[in-house]
Image (cartoon, rainbow, N blue to C red; front, side):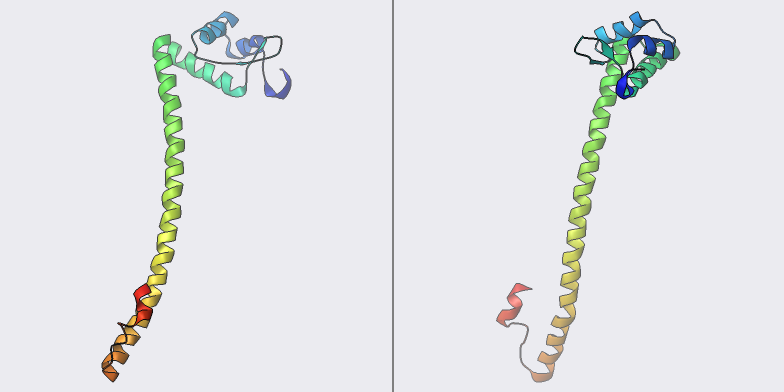
Length: 137
């Protein structure tokens, strides 16, 4: 195992019980993109290993060819991005909903004041609701 949780190609091949050439093929096809050292040695992260596992499941268990795997991985990547965008949008909606509720509570607090003015207007036959103070509410 290499430093910082990164694996060499031989370790990954051994972990997954595949030939290193299979991993190189997946890289040539653009299905995986391992990090490289300054000496150009491939270093695989745990996420890279999981990607290779998924490729193996798709090809070996489901019979998907590498072109199909590429389409599936691209769609998966787009779905992850869309999920992140949806979470951002949901947070914006929540924040705006909270602001709306605060504004609504402020408006509801003004309703009893207007009702009191209405009752005083009826009692004294004077229109308190049309004063300049209420143009803001």
